[in-house]
Image (cartoon, rainbow, N blue to C red; front, side):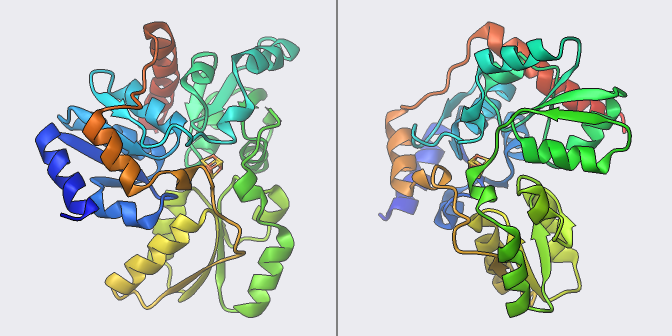
Length: 307
Ligand code: SF4
């Protein structure tokens, strides 16, 4: 049996599912039940009757899955897979930040630990960040940890001051405005699709700015044939694969060769097999943190469902 067959057999025996973020190594899709962005994956997992969830992603994502499925065993293939952005803020830093702006609500990007969510007022994703901040009806909000997503939200809203924490994604910041300009020279007919974690000067040059899910949907629906993708390479790889398999006749190129999240790529098929076999790397969250962090996510979901 090859590694894929071995994982699939174990999954059946243990009633396990595998969630795979679209920044992962593409071969992991072969054993995955769901592929997508982090909140979608956690919500889909919560609807299943699986006993075990393997989250092929980074630590905060596995925590989010545990928050939404507390009764299930959630395992992370490789404990070194932390998100560099989410690690830029902890509870102590957040409390200091809040103390500088008393009374101003904290909007917390989903790319944060459960502990940071528990200290925040409402969560958001890169898809709904603008609508969540708008729904608060406040003149000022604090936004953690991603300063660039926060600035993007401010740019899209009139009359709201978004005070951002100074976190960022090192992978998305490697995409510089000159990379977009150079790539456009090479592919003059291409549309540039960028993630809002990019620097604002980079995002400004894009034809479309959206979450990974929105980028993938936009690319599929668009009449254009060539695209430059300004986000993690896993998205470009999956778009090219789907275009080939489903005959879209479209081509996707990264805007540079550095858009690789090293932590995401820590997870391998061997790691997945190992954690599933031995049921190690389990995510645990104390009840107190879980209740508060879940409330932060629930407020976001409730806000969304009212629209
Ligand atoms: S790409 Fe950036 S934000 Fe996403 S997991 Fe990697 S470090 Fe975190």
